[in-house]
Length: 231
Image 1 (spheres, rainbow, N blue to C red):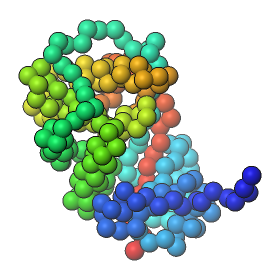
Image 2: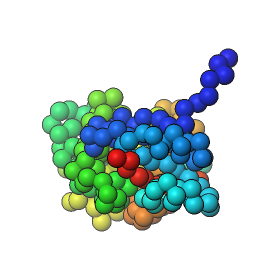
Image 3: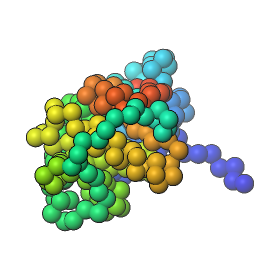
Image 4: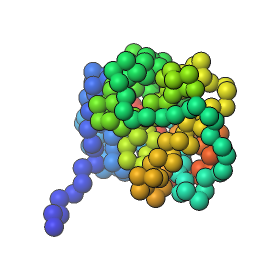
């Protein structure tokens, strides 16, 4: 068995591609990791317990960006309700529908930490989500959400049992439909053999937090996210 220590600074190629800068994630919040990060120019992210002492972060120029909440559910937790007739989801997505989903992706992630961080290039923040959706589409890991009239109404991107990226078209919001599409996707993931299904949500995104709560999901392990840009 190898005794080589795990790296304290990991590259984040998805962020680098979006912003045109080197990008890194600190594997832990420690003096050793911060010392390595000081010598690595680019965008840097670290996740810490909300109750951790943040003085080292402040001394090294990190600033608060967001708080993430993990949420998950097992089948027994889900609340029973009848899914609205005509709504459906599908992973077999044609080129025209994929293009429609990508168009929905533009500018809808205002709660994302890179959009909320005014030190970040906002065009780069938008590219990050576009690129992410394209990668998920290429991997066949996107559920398209379809309205009763058959039109694409949104998407949920998954990685295994995790719902990692999702959006509903503006025309479909405020109608109480999201929980129906989410339930269809969650049921499909359980049918595929996953014991639990989960996601990670910005604490400021009340609409999505309420959506998961309405389905019966519970919330766990909050993490504060800090950013900095090292020239």
